[in-house]
Image 1: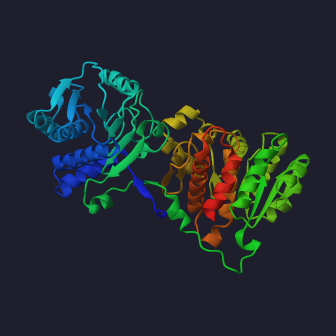
Image 2: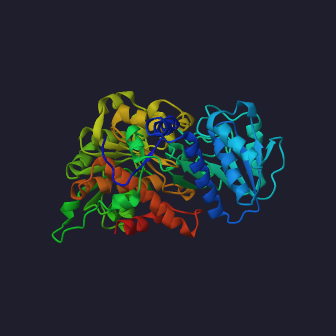
Image 3: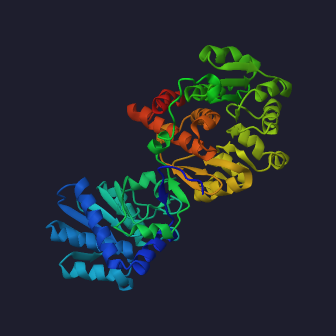
Length: 501
């Protein structure tokens, strides 16, 4: 597995259960101790976010998640805070450590009631209903309880994961609690950081429950969350002897009729990310506009493959797709780029053209030196699926794309996923303000520039993509400090340069 600096492992539900089992059975940590530590951590977090709560309502299910909830209620009761537990599901089915927790809370005088659609009183709500074991859509009283919580307007703390959120995919399973804070235990669940998760989790806090560090060496996660600062720390200072040839050349191929802006944004982003030379191959009628916007970019009008080949030969990395279109001209440009064997960032209509031509996919084959950057719709077309099927399990879709095409696949979206040969990476930088045209074009330019500088930086293709995605999202977060609405793709470019500076 390629090592990426500063990553944080993310786990599936099954892997988290194995961590739990390993701690209990192999290292002798009693399950009730882990449950007590989880409750203590969640309660301390609650009191830190909402100091001196007058009333706490804990909604408990019948599993270990509910056991955590009972111990949280017990701690609140001991602290002199008014607390009530609402029990969902058949209490007779509670067993093991969860039963010990319930009996302890009742013995200590905690008010425990059966859930009967009671109105939630003013105070803090603790969601301890459905943990990571949920296998299908939420049903029965749990639907009503989740609706009551979400409609109450009260502050909510979710225990381990918001009820109804799939811990493996980040998908809402029919209904999900929208929490203000989520406290996750032992291993961070990968579903906390992608797709629907951000709307459900609120701020995510993590505690390892003092599990022995040796436990984590027993369970390999296969997925990791990226940290921008660690990636930026990899970038070396530029030597005083640097020249433009030291940092590679990028050729942006795109800008069919009426779509010059996409190529222009990609080129400007590549330039601002430090590429030594940036060229654009576009329609002749767009040359003057691109030169006027960014004179540092060498812009060429190309009509045929013969016009394009010399530009390809003099470039190190190709960015194919921004504003490329799907005309016969577009197809010529794409096939010429794929024939050359040079590193390629393939985006937008470059992906759509490839998806729509089986012969082209067979000809392109599996390559190690290209980067695919699909959004869910483009990913679906490449896999013969619809976007809903891709979003149902983004991790599986990213992995499948990488296995089919090779190279590095970046599945864009909330919690963007990067699939390399042996590893899945997740970047949770970014915000909803990025839901506007041109964001992908800027990103493709960033990736092209970083690939062109990979030798100078001593970074692999996977590391370049990881850095580029995090830069792009973090820049959007900086630019959105003035508001998410109206955020434009070009607003990110100065922020990206500042982050790299």
